[in-house]
Image (cartoon, rainbow, N blue to C red):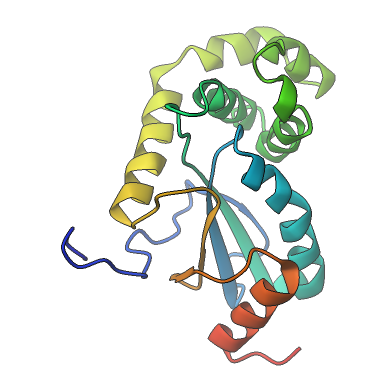
Length: 184
């Protein structure tokens, strides 16, 4: 593990079953994103990762970890809690997308109404949102990011190595393929 005096570009926290992931667990390529629902750069990354996922197909497992930067994005933590509450009903990725779709309205949006539009059972959603387990989960993701040198969002790790290139589909796909020894 890297110390604070030795910055590392390696992901010290492996992907676990608790992580939110799309794609096969045995995919040869894993991309981990540390993201923030109120971050404009994370919003810009949404179509990029969709393109990367389309290009790589079943060769890719995409993982999202929470890294709410509450000092500059005051609604990011509440949004992350809503995503976790939706996960309790099997709708993490639907809420994930909806939060980005409504990013510019996070200050005013009624998260319960958003949950209803996704078909979530509202009483379970509200009860779940108030549970400490979600705050702990978000804090664990955040602390994992800090341990791994995350300073901004989105920060990506491709097969355990921080990606410092341009956040565009072609560059990410090229880095993923090069790092996994796969051919297109």
